[in-house]
Length: 84
Image (tube, rainbow, N blue to C red; front, side, top):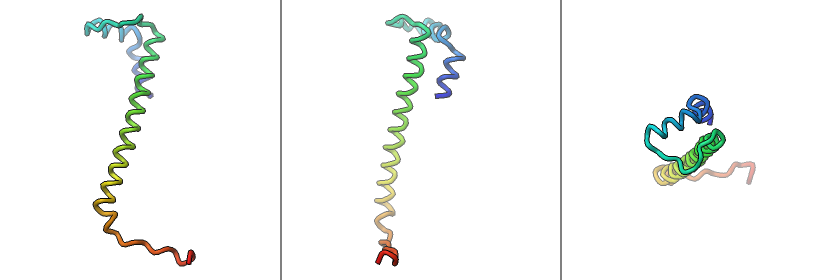
């Protein structure tokens, strides 16, 4: 998020509009300062949500792989003697 805000201040709406013109990209809507910030921060939030989902999915996959490889081979733990 900090990088998106820093990039927004460094490039700005005019820099982004110039980049779109250089690349030959036509904007279907009017490109204003407000729309620039909405697209910049909104796009970054969507990437962050995707990143969290990817991390959670890979973490779950890692847990499953660990259990399949070494978790089943561990001896069962006995309950604490206080619980008896």
